Image (tube, rainbow, N blue to C red; front, side):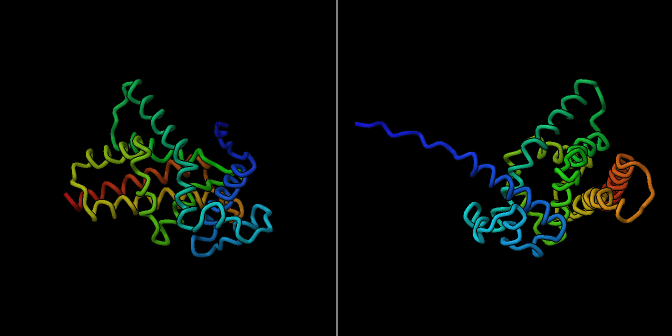
Length: 217
């Protein structure tokens, strides 16, 4: 009896999936979830196949999840690295430290065009009411979940809709700063360095978060 052969993944198929994921991330970041069709995503990678995205992912909603699964392993790993380093150095793990651990990996991530594609994708998802889609994969990225739970614990508040609303608004400040950083040259905006703009946004996010917590206390 002939033994069944293990089916190997076609590297060309994997490359196509990654290209579609990254094209979708960039297009969603720029034009929003509702402003991009599956056909446009296929065209962005040079495919003449009108159903290439549907073939690989089925729906736009499934493509969103694929973007998370493409980016979050490295981001969660980086957060774990930053948290471990802070603990090893004996740093105080306060809200400031946790916000840096949360947001720095998104500032560090850029695509081939040197744009903060994932952070801007998250911003687009939030603007169009798809923020909860990120929560569907929370359990697969334990450090990211741990860090946010540590923030909530330090604020001394019970999880609530009002608290998460404050966290949502605080997150918006940082994510929108990444869009500003990417576009400021075209806007002819003379300002500080990208890192300084990012750090200012994190500081403003912290202030917004603490103010929201104060009202809930």
